[in-house]
Length: 319
Ligand SMILES: [Zn+2]
Image 1 (tube, rainbow, N blue to C red):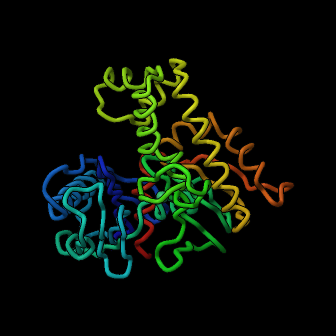
Image 2: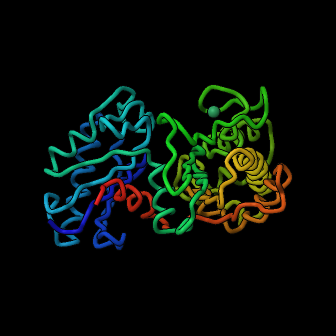
């Protein structure tokens, strides 16, 4: 058997696959749009095809691989390979045996993990968190996800740890996409930020955000729309991003007060795009709330880029 293994990052808009060796070097990659219609079986088939394509680029067949790891949204059960409630995927409100289905289709072992957690583990093994014993990953995108490494090992709790986006940063605060109030994600998640921008627009606040969105052929405020509107000097864009940074800083500080990690790694669509630009502001917001302020954790942007989630997922395959 070769040393090669596969990794699949299953996202709401795209499926990214990689073939990597034991050192984490990428030998092949392929991506495909995530099906927007059908159900879990259709998504699994698209994942299979994209993995086969990456394997072909690497000169391998799926059954040559040591295994395939999958980073999945929703409730991904690493023991059973079942994924439940992946609501941003078509027809996936219930449970689907993703691990078993892919293992049969690809004739190799398949392991399933949480998408953000595996991306954070990738950064720990190969990226911004290399060599550290402890880190907190904060994935700032449509929502705000998290991942924790303690004593060099992932901390999953009973399976639901690191949901930093749903730490309460304001009692009875803004409504969160999760249905509760005052979560960090209610202020910092891209979906919540878009909802706030639309409410402000309806109230008559002037903004170019939605012109930029249309000009770029989008129907949602993607990370690139936020970036272009910021570059054009749109005031609402800047104020909503700064508001997000304030609440991110507050929530991260609380997590650091609890865990005392060596580093905080910021990833996700908005995190990678705006991390460098706003890192000093984010650190300053965090510092305001640190109980022990003289030795703050290192603040870093995720280093593995677009392939990070898939490379991290490949690490689920045990050598
Ligand atoms: Zn929430």
